[in-house]
Length: 425
Ligand code: ATP
Ligand code: MG
Image: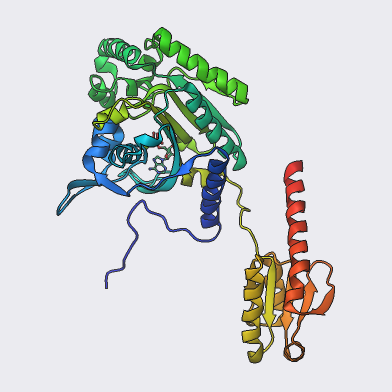
């Protein structure tokens, strides 16, 4: 029989890699709560138009990275390459406008047909945060603070926030025309890719990595901001200063998608080579209109979970707190009963079913247990367990109920020790 293989560019995770992935998601959920962002869920696939209309036909995603297929009753559908367009679609079709301004966040799988490499997959996962229905620059600031705190809580070092403004529609259109004029004068010296996008998406040439494009990208005219756009950007910068979030201005920062206006940003690290962008976004005031909705200001960001997971500490797994060791066949149901009681009391418990006593003890120790409950013939007869503090070695005969308190104390102590260690680091 032909051996089945995974789809190219997908990943299956276990152990440390899966723990780091889960740690990123759990930290995101915690920070989301701190910033008052509500959870949303949107479908994994949409009508192709949802993405094609909003992301722009010349964007990399729409022009070559979409996973689209014909469905029997829905015409062309596409697996989501990102969250923003689907959330904007739901904002319109679910009548979420009544909740505006709406602070929402979600996470899950996204799909892009790209050449797989380190940090670049065909199914990857994103964290996503959006504020819909707010034209206030403080929405941009709050989102940036959310992103910065997330990266901070994850302990990711060496991250820089690059910030730019793409102006309002008017200043952006004027800049676009100036860029076309500038690049057209050097048409034949540009890379083939840039020649192709010159007319439709000249902004993209600015962040081209092709060395043939760099000199012309570097000498390209800068955007001239309208007074209004200047004021908006000024408020964003002042807000970040007030919040103590550091940033670098980068006039060449453009986002790959057409729908961005005003604020554009990327948190980048030099630790992942070419795949250095870990969290990116900006304001997309024109997007909901492109879906046929009313003018709706909005701003958001997305972060790749895999890229963040590569940067977090590898010791994120929370160990167990108690180990139960049944001695002999008869003790097995007693072990189950004891473990259930401890777990019901909020104690992470593992039963070590078989093997030599010493071996089981060392496995319990390696799993992080602070205490062990040994159950043999004598204990069964007495209705107790042999309780052992694995740090001091102290042993006592206790009922299972009586072990809850000392185990909880040991776990709390271990947690405090870990915190103070982190504080010092
Ligand atoms: P890049 O320039 O690396 O292709 P992008 O501009 O296409 O990134 P966005 O559309 O802004 O990326 O997506 C937000 C984040 O999602 C990225 O910063 C990255 O962390 C992650 N990401 C995007 N594409 C992939 C992928 N194919 N595999 C893994 N993570 C990805
Ligand atoms: Mg990309």
